[in-house]
Length: 569
Image (cartoon, rainbow, N blue to C red; front, top):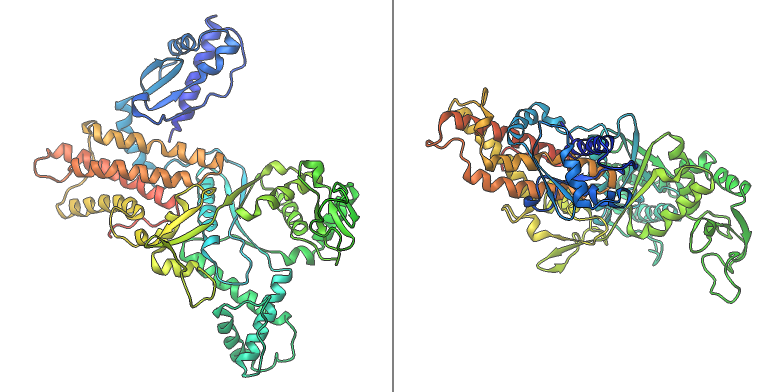
C-alpha cells in the first residue's frame, strides 16, 4: 500500500520545483521533506513544516512560502483538502472517497499489509537475549528478547532480509564456575560428601536436576574428572532450556554464535595483533593518560596489562584488553565478534543489550573504528530493568529456582501474549514495572486483552454472519460512515509506524499504535452495527466489509508484535 507520508512528501517536493521554475520561489537545495500524522485531528491527517525550513534560504515569510507551495501542488486522488496555518504549516486531509477504496486494498494485502521496500536488497542482523548459559532466562533478559524479536519483525516488514542471532558467552570464568558447580552437584547426587563453596557457585535448583540426569547417564564414571566435561554438559542442557523457553514466546533464533569459536579460530588474538599493528594498543602497568597521583583503575598497578587507546576515539579513558595474568577482558572478544559480524556482509547490525552495557558497547565501536571498519552499521538498543509488581509491592517470581525470576515462571503465571506485549509496551530506555495483577485480568483493563478482543469481536461478527447466511462479497464501501473512516485513517498510519520503527530502532512504537487502534475500534464496534435488524441490507454488507478490513489490520499488528490473533476469548 501507499506510504502516505512519502506520497505527500513527493507532492510537496514537486510543488517546490514547480514554484521555482515559475519564479515564485528562488533557487535553493530542497531539504528532506518530513511529513507525519499530527497529534491533533483538527490539524489534518498529515502535516508538513517544510515552509519553516525554507524561510531562510528563500528569504520569504514561511506563511507565504506555504501558500506558494499549496498553489503548485499537483493533483492526487488521496488528497481531499489542503490548509495553510500560521506560521507556515501545510495540513492535508485525506479524500474520503479514496479512503473508502482502501478497505478493499487492506483486505487484498492481508497478512502482507504495508509490506515496505525500505530495506529491499539489504541484510540486517538483530542480536538479542545473548544471556550466559549459566541458568534459565530471567525476566531482565526477557525484556530484551521481546524488544529484539519485535525489532526483527518490523525490519522484515520494512523489507530487510533479517537474521536473528544469539551470542552465547560460553567462554571465561563464569563457565568454569558453572562446570565446577555441576561437578559438586554430581558428586552430591552420587552420595559423596561435598563442601558447597560460599563464592563462585551457582545455587539454582536446575543444577541438581542436571546432576541427577548426568548420574543416570554416566554413572560414577566422571568422579575423577575436572570441571570441563561438566561445563560442556551444563552448557548443552542450558542451550536446550533457553531455546525451549524462547519458543514459548514465539522466538526462534537463526544463529547461535558461541564465544568459544572466537578462541578456537584464533580471531581474538588476531584482532589484538591487528590493533597492535595499527598502533592502537600498548603494554603498561597503568594507562598512559592517567597521572601517577590518580587512583588506579582496571588493571593499573597489578602488573603489565595490554591497553587499548580508546581515548583517541573519544572514550573517557583507555581500556584493558588483556589483563596482567594474560586473560582477555570482555572487550577484546566483543571486538573480535563484531569484526566477524561486519565481515559477514550485513548492512545493518542491531544489538539489544542491558543498560549495564552502556559503556562497553561504545568501546566496541571504538575498536571497530580503530580497525578501519564501518562502525556506523552498528546500532544499540539499551534495555532498562524490569520489576515484578503485585499488590503494589515488588515480588520474585519463584523461590524454587534460587535467585531467578524466570521467564518460564512469568509465562506460567500470565501468558506468552501478555509477556510479549507488556515487556514491549514501554520505551526500552525507561524502567518497567510489570503489574502481575493487571496482567492476569480478563477485562479491558488489561491492554493485551483490550487489543486482542478487537480481533475477537471481528471474528465473532463473521461467525454470526455465516450462521445467518450473510456475506460481505460485493459490498458497496461508499455506504460507510464517518465512524468507520476514522478507523481507516488510523489503519493507514500503520505504514508510517513500521517505517519509523525501522528507521529509529524503536519497536515499542507498534505497541503504542496497537493500543491507539484498539481504543478507536471498540466504540465503533458498539455504535456501528452490521447485524442489527434495523440496518438496511446494503449498509450491513458494507459494514461487514469494514469489519473484514479491521480484522486484517489487527491480525497484522498482533503478528508484528509476535502475538496470537485469537478468534475467541
